[in-house]
Image 1 (cartoon, helix red, strand yellow):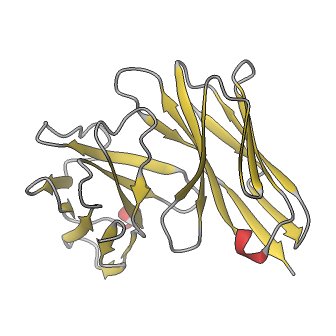
Image 2 (cartoon, rainbow over the protein chains, first blue to last red):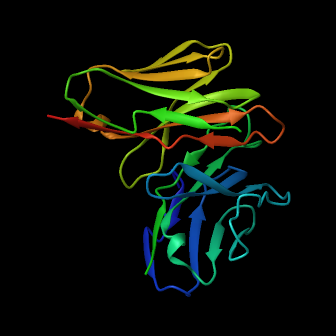
Length: 116
Length: 113
């Protein structure tokens, strides 16, 4: 596709349920990132994938959060046993390798998660 | 602690007016600084990137400045348009081997007719 796509655009769930958020990066981008944007807060880094390397999970806030990237392309962020404080916009971004330096990260539109 | 602080938190201006947004950072070592524009309900889009040796860079009506000595950057918007209404986010890349990005909380700009 032309840009990073994310689905669903909105997700409302009940506390305690599991959710899966999907990200389709730009074709050819080997680096993929997940961020969380809470109301009035800056973007919070969650996890980073680069090619076949082990992901950088240093930003995941708890073991309820996990992510995988299959075939070096599509990624899924899973939140288990959701809590109200998980409510936020979850943004995915991708970039060319190495994903550092001046390489620009291109962001998707985000998934707005609301936990009731 | 590596931090990025933006001011003001929000700003309302009339269409056609100019404005300047500020970004102060304590990130060290420094690699580069980007300004992003984030429209409501959309992901951030890069406006400009500044590296250590660059003082000024323009992108249409947007002009970014960087003072690496004082660790300050500004984004000046000239002749504002209604479509400039958005959040503007300052992002600094750490110069270490991991190259982490540190995000400011953004300035919410509203341009009124």
